[in-house]
Image (cartoon, rainbow, N blue to C red; front, side, top):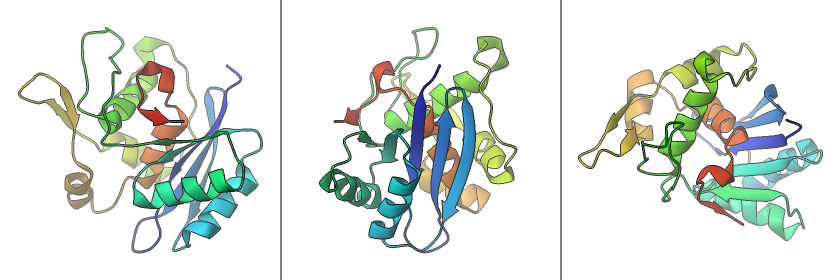
Length: 183
C-alpha cells in the first residue's frame, strides 16, 4: 500500500529495550533494538531511521519525552498514541469495542495476522517478535468491551516486556480506525 511507518516503543533502563519497527507497505522490514539510552539518544536513533516515514510513538512518559524532542527539532510526521486513552476502534465485524487504545491496537494486529482476513502482511522471523505477538490474552469485561491483558500482568507471566510486539503493533496502527493519536 506504499505506507512507510515506524512504530517506536521507548525504554530507558532496566531489562526493557527501545525497539523501532520499520514498515514498508505490508512488510515489516526491520526491527532495531537499543538499550539504556537517554531519551535524547533515542530521538537521534529515530531521526536517523525516519527516511520519510510517519512515526508513531507509544505515549508513556518516556515516549512523550522523545516525541517532544522530535517535535522541537521540527519533525512534523511524528505522532503519539496514549495506550490507556479511549478508542473508537471496532473489530472487523464492527461489533466489538475496546477498553483502550492498547487493546484496540493489539486487536488490529491480531486481525492483520489472521489469514482468513487476506491482509498478507509480512513480518521478519525474529523470535522476540513472534513470542510477543502470541503472548497476550484478552477477555470481555463486565460491559462486553474487549480488554487486553495488562502489561504488568503479562510481564510477570512471560518474564519480560513485549517491546517488539508493541513497536510492531504501532507500525501497523491506523489512526483512522479509531485511534486516539495526538496531532
